[in-house]
Length: 305
Picture 1 (cartoon, one colour):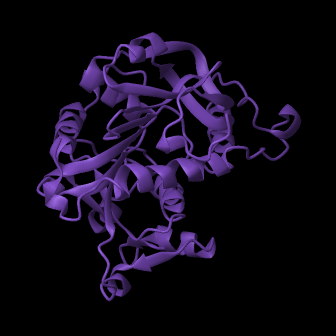
Picture 2 (spheres, rainbow, N blue to C red; picture 1 turned 120 degrees about the vertical axis):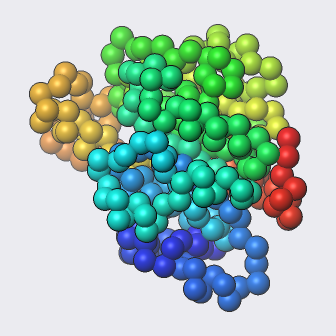
């Protein structure tokens, strides 16, 4: 089934060329189905790239989904034109009166800053509060996960001795619907300078630690009611995303180690090994099915804690 996107969104053509079923608004209006309403708060600087990555995974499900793209109003993006944001993105003030079946909050390249010094922290805090009564389930990714864990539970992010950069093996620590169909071990990409301690996560009441890595640490967790899902890595990444990040930092003369377990034979001249695609698709489809579709009320205004 398709994802419903704005008629002229550039990501639509990219996804259609990959045979992802995308339906524009005008066609969707002729179907007598209530689509799932999913809002994506895109905090990444390269918004179009992140749109494609997330929509590709969301579109690989048997559900019709209506997407709303959201940006922060208190931060001016330097990598996307104002015209593009005006055409395709809403702000929190524009959507705060609505209800959504699901929400995705992305990562952001602000890991080295204290949360309160991020210029949109107050706005993001209002979003976290708003989700309690307006969203059935929220999926937090990377820095978005760290930020929500800090805001809701006081879990501090901690600087890492070196960047967690590469593709790492993870283990299922608790089998829940979110990981249905997963192998006991699976791979996922990480690209971050900070992390959270498992001991701090274990103190959260009514919370499941679902997957961890001996190297990358805490990876997937969720509240027992499924209203909050946390993923500290980047399962949505394209095959070449880590390669692009590595080459970018090399060009800038930054100290960066080659991403681990990524290039064939550890040779950056060779293509990457894509070992995370299947589990990424399962993660998103399970979230949409078991934590959103199966739980959200048909009357979306009845969402509440």
